[in-house]
Length: 363
Image (spheres, rainbow, N blue to C red):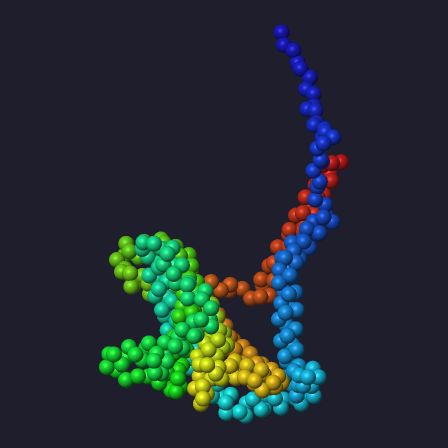
């Protein structure tokens, strides 16, 4: 004997008083979500740019205005004289001497600094004992006060009683005129810069080296490549983006060098014959020594344009190196924008269709 059971529809669960009904995403909410997805990143980073506009862009623009005026500090006003301040700066022999000294110190500090930083980073990347101790030790010169470093090294490179000349004379070598000779003073100041910034660049390069996949080195070892071959074939090509960043920052910092030449002697004017006078040091002397802020502002903008030109050259070199690595996007900017716009439209349409299906389900 068989009996047929009548199928009853399954009871639908009704939300209790404490539970909330899930809300479906409608067309209006999807459009709001798309705008939130588009605008929220800019809102997150806006505090930095607002503060930068107040504390950075406004002083830069105000300096540009002052550079075209014969500024009176007492009345806090000036008379517009056009490009006369720029013409005066470019006509001064001291400007070209300062520019030569700046580039000389920059080259003597940046090139050895980067070479030594790459070498130390490669040594710290090996499996050595007390890794943390050695990695923290290379950063100690960077955290030292620049004034303290300059005072110590200026005494070390003293012409008569300095440690360096005393050591050279004990070895039977003649003493070096570290303050009277221009090139010798550049070497001494570049040594200060290298002492301070080598450890900082070392840690940046070390972080980039540790990001290189170790499978590359294992495969190279299996193929019979030695440590030197692995360094030049794997490590250096992988460090290209980081090296470019370090070179750009070293260029900007090297052309703005001030603390070391300022504290190299007790007067801080760049030497009796302008042996180590830099552009920023002359800018300080013109602005706060001669109280001529119009000329100092013009000199600051000339230095800014020089740094901008060198930065543009670095950008061209950067793009060529990145293109050689194959990491550059082959699509044009218009194609990338069109693809991003199509992706946003698909996201909006999917959200809208999902909202309509939810409405139909509720009906």
